[in-house]
Image 1 (cartoon, one colour):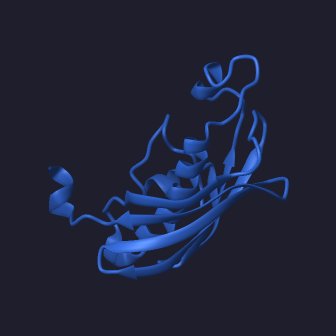
Image 2 (spheres, helix red, strand yellow; image 1 turned 120 degrees about the horizontal axis):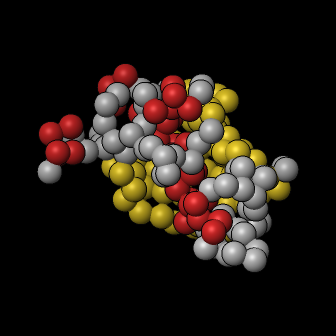
Image 3 (cartoon, one colour; image 1 turned 180 degrees about the vertical axis):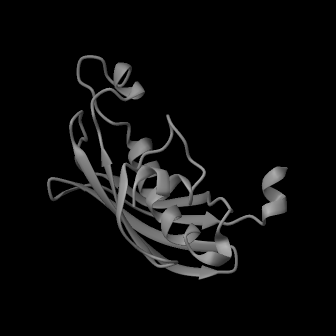
Length: 146
């Protein structure tokens, strides 16, 4: 799935879209995405100028966006947004630097109605960089306009 195809599923846009492509997606269940860091990303200018590192919160967001593709490509949720409702067990184990490619996987663990739980992780060169369990919500379309 190209970035344009990703944009047809999730509402994120530059400079806050952290998926370059999706390699695999099982609707409502799982997704594998890739974020290719060029070194030109805006956050490297300030985090940190002499030792650029992707902020951990952005790694977590990238994993969440991967999970959002999994759930929002399901026909019944097309056109909605997935909102972050909670984070558990977030771990940052490897620094992600300019030029790295991070491969992320996300799996929907359980879902009841518009509330769910997903787990995900991101790897650079086969090494675990980030992992987390997150809770998400899928507000009704009319609630998104509030």
